[in-house]
Image (cartoon, rainbow, N blue to C red; front, side):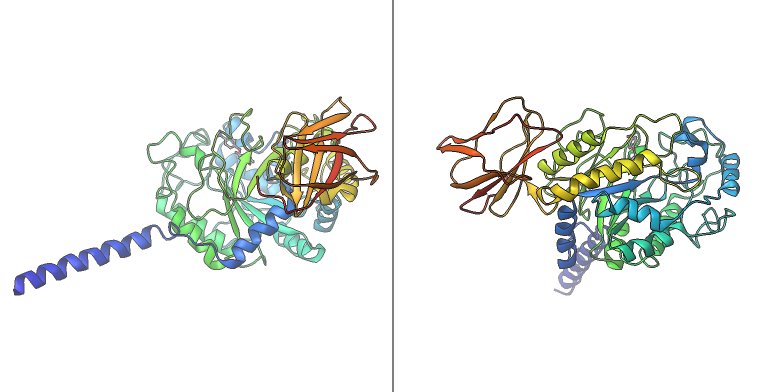
Amino acid sequence: MYSITMKTKKILLGVVMTVGLLIHVSAQSGYMPSDENIKARGVFQDDKFGIFIHWGIYSMLADGEWVMHNRNLNWEEYAKLSWGFYPAKFNAAEWVSAIKASGAKYITVTTRHHDGFSMFATKYSDYNIVDATPFRRDVIKELAEECKKQGIRLHFYYSHLDWRRDDYYPLGRTGNGTGRTTHGEWKDYCAFMNNQLTELLTNYGTVGAIWFDGMWDKKNQPDGMTAKTWNLDEQYALIHRLQSACLIGNNHHIKPFAGEDIQLFERDLPGENTAGLSGQDISPLPLETCETMNGMWGYKMTDQNYKSTETLIQYLVKAAGKNANLLMNIGPEPNGQLPAVAVQRLREMGEWMKVYSRTVQGTRGGVVAPHDWGVTTQKGKILYVHVLNLKDKALFLPYAGNKLKHAVEYQSRKAVRFMQDKEGLLLKFSETPSSPDYVLELTFTNELPER
Ligand code: JFZ
């Protein structure tokens, strides 16, 4: 009798310990986003448009943010760049107002990229903008204060991958030629990241999102893409504990892990994969795709191949039609200025947004699926039809079951003739649709369903 009880107790204890361990190990596995987090996801989707900033000491070499890896630069030699980094023309107020003028609602800035240099004041490494440059200013702090002042949200890019530290070990596919001869412990690297994330989520006010990147570096290792290897459960739980509304996104190019609040795509709209980086399935999380204005993320002197304002507007509209945000990148110059062409693009996008922002921001992907001719967005009973590419003076929309009350050209408010039957709607235009985006506003009798 006694031995059975003991045995039962032991089993019970074992079960309790296992459950405890499971809960501990996978802290974010049963992740239930807080009410504030859910609300922040809605705000994020309403924002629709953000500006990505890739800036670091690599900008001085003017060959993109991958220069350390691409040219196998020795980590000790590369570090000497920092003592020449004096971005005399950096002015957070100018950045934020130029960005705001575009209609973008948030900025995602690189706090630490793969080269391992921290662009903020950190106690956990001397290799940072305050301790290792003559500039000695915490540009992330200045940006955070200015964003708050001008009412624009701030997101932090944070690299999981490091080409410099020796506790980033075992190495992955990149950064093998930066001259590391010693190696430390992976667990120390994980602790280092969490310490820095704690600083970023404690010292800079409200952080809209943490944008992780670099896990893909260990794709070649059997466990290289697991939450366990990267300590994601603890890391994500820490972030949500510090700021529960902070959205976590990770540019790992695979299905989101538990604890992530948004799903990221790179250089392609969700569902497209022309760049070969975005083959992942679309999850129910809010979506964001990032794209460069020219061809590179970090400043590259020889890359002046900027996309036209028309292309950028159409890209934003297409993202909105696919229910995704667009994060459009700028690589500031070594002196701290945004490239003049980028500022001009921002201004021109802003001109368009002054008129059309309501057909994009605050909307969701429309009930009529994206097509070659364009996309739709919607809010309540209103469907915005964005005709991006059509030579005809008429357009058929395969949507029935909701009576159309009236249709107008968005800007001129001129009525658009239409016919509706059980197969859908035929819209007839008085002119051929104009570029970059001929927008129609359709008001229905009932709320539009989600696509
Ligand atoms: C990543 C970064 O490496 C890049 O520097 C930039 O920050 C961009 C937004 O995100 O881009 C990638 C991601 C994955 C691969 C290459 C570049 N990959 O899998 O080889």
